[in-house]
Length: 439
Ligand code: C2G
Image (tube, rainbow, N blue to C red; front, side):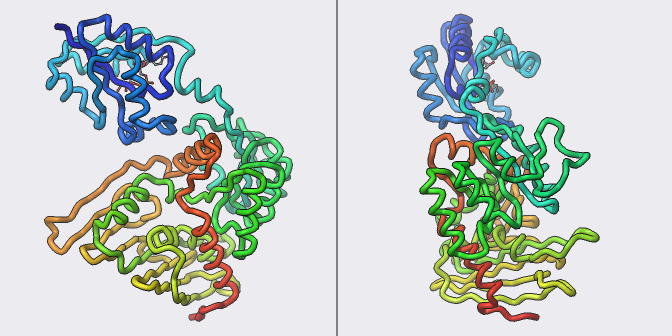
């Protein structure tokens, strides 16, 4: 019996995939199909796969062409499978020519002509491509550029406009993206807008009023009332309003939250979250709490919620400015405590430490763009390290989540409405001096 094996994502199974499977099967008597696991696809840079692993496995099964189906989970698994299953032939489409010649050491390698013009990527591209306008302040130019670059990794998304309100087109703009100095004109070009600007409450309101979906940095607004208004407006307009906080969409961060919620360190008793950066030479002082607060608050709100019973803040301001250079906010919950330390002009160790009754979780600096964390116990032999590849600091995952949420018509933010309102509440109370001591 001649055993043949092939592997693939098989997302949105289509004619090209089926033709490949038919010809693979014709190479022998028994066909094994390896379907890639989500994590494996991510690790090899394939993101925004629309279907779950089980949906993709079921679709392959229903073709009736596979005698056996397995899951491809790690780099190098092909060698293991070929040896373990005594495979005679490995085959894959011609878009991979040369990539798997090393398997000749274990079996015959056959590249089959790829079926032209049909691909999951093209299928997705043919779907409604979400047109996105990027609108931000000049001080956020780096973030805007990163957003535009990262968008290229996300199927079904096209950045169609770039806008810094009131600014003429810069020399080093993005070549293939139209420039606007009027944010409302930029909005009109797209189905959705990304906002990273001090005026974002007003612009988010205008975007939602004109039926645009909004991906917005936090805080949505300087007050809880305005934040709630935006959330309600999005519902009235049947538009998506989603928080842009790249850390929330990073695989490592989400897996960390799931581990902690599964009790890996027991009951969470304390969270210490620090985010700092130094001001760039000549840069205008900006509020540390406004720029770093939403990120620093993310693990606190995800794990302990917004039901603190007491909150206090210590702060020091930039020389000659009302902007805080360093702020520490301490929260007391019924059975836990948390502290965030944020600095824009004061430098500290940007780590995240989550203490529990069975151990603690440690994320080294810069924890907010981590691909790695450790669960530590009394006996170091019980410590475990976790690594999850993070491309582009998580921005492309944030964009992929936004596109998917718009396509599905349902918000799937990693921060829910209550958390977004809690961020605005912390900001509002800070600026109102509630529980704030100046040092
Ligand atoms: N394919 C094809 N014609 C198409 C699209 C895909 O012949 N129009 C083939 C691919 O060459 C591949 C298989 O169908 O052999 C599955 O394609 P994908 O689901 O896109 O997965 P891919 O990442 O290309 O799989 O490690 C090997 C990879 O997993 C190959």
